[in-house]
Amino acid sequence: MAEAARTPLMAGNWKMNLNHVEAVHLLQKLSWTLQDKKHDFERVEVAVLPPFTDIRSVQTLVDGDRMKIKYGAQDVSTKDAGAFTGEISAAMLSKLGCTYVLTGHSERRQYHGEDDALVNAKTAKALEAGLVPIMCVGEGLEIRKENGQVEHVLAQVDAGLAGLKQDDVRKVVIAYEPVWAIGTGEVATPEDAQEVNSAIRARIEETISPSVADSVRILYGGSVKMASAGGIMAQPDVDGCLVGGASLQVDEFAGICRYLDLQLGYSS
Ligand SMILES: O=C[C@H](O)COP(=O)(O)O
Image (cartoon, rainbow, N blue to C red; front, side, top):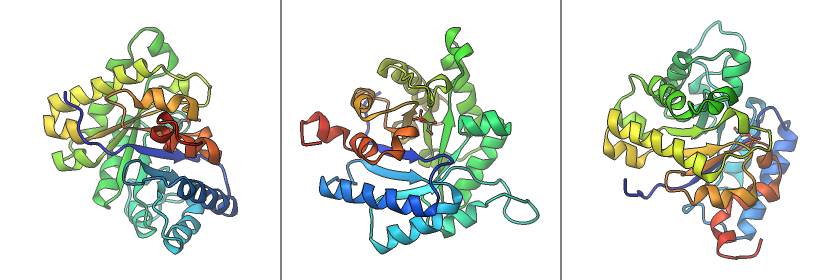
């Protein structure tokens, strides 16, 4: 399939790190670093996904300083409101100016028993509130050893997108994250990422439409660093990175966002 004009997205998932004071420091430094390097946010979009308790502070800083960095949350409830202790609704996130929300991150699947049906419900709920879901899929090590990654991931994609309207699927960002490469230092090769990302795109072409498949952004995540981002991003079906550990280090994350400049040999 011909490569469409999909704006790359670099999203930093802070996971359960940084209180709201630390969040403000990191975001300020990230913004200064990118501004200093004249980062073109239209060419490579940048987003951070802080813990819920940081979002109001992040919003205030982004609005006050007119930052072009976008932000979002790491999870969302399937419920609108009511007696659901500990849950956060999509409308609450929307009110805080969030652009994105993760659904189905492997750590939610692993530690909170989230299954494909719940991921599908969260993805639909996010879209309903005007948020862009970043829906995560990926195989564990056992499946990879048996070479079952494509089949496994496509089943997650089918289930996660089930029942969504074409125009909604077009807005969804999908993140392929092989679970064995998350936080382990084991990076999938660029070819591994391309194999699965291209299979996801082909599946969307087959089950939804060629035009949606051409527009939908498919990220790669799993131990991405400044040094590996360029090779991964050179793959035609990789439209950005979902970055965990390295997004907590300003220079690393800024380097990942600037992968194009660094390839061109601009100063780091
Ligand atoms: O959401 C991010 C991914 O889980 C990747 O995390 P990582 O970059 O620390 O491996």
